[in-house]
Amino acid sequence: MSHEVKSASAAVEDDAWVDGVAADLADQRELLENVLDVVRGNRAMLVELRAEVDKLRKRRWWRFGR
Image (tube, rainbow, N blue to C red):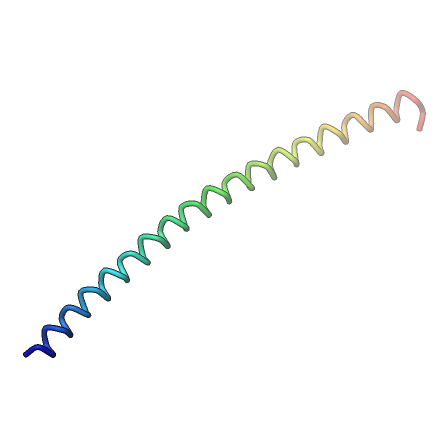
């Protein structure tokens, strides 16, 4: 009987550990999703900035005949 009690206790501890790992992974996933959102936002800003730089370069070259 004591072996069964130890096994049940070990199973409960294993379940608690798995739940803890699952919660940690969920937190990490949320953080990574937030980082990905920031990266996507930065990329969008860079695309916009590149377009503005290209416009300015074309204007300058047109004005100075280059």
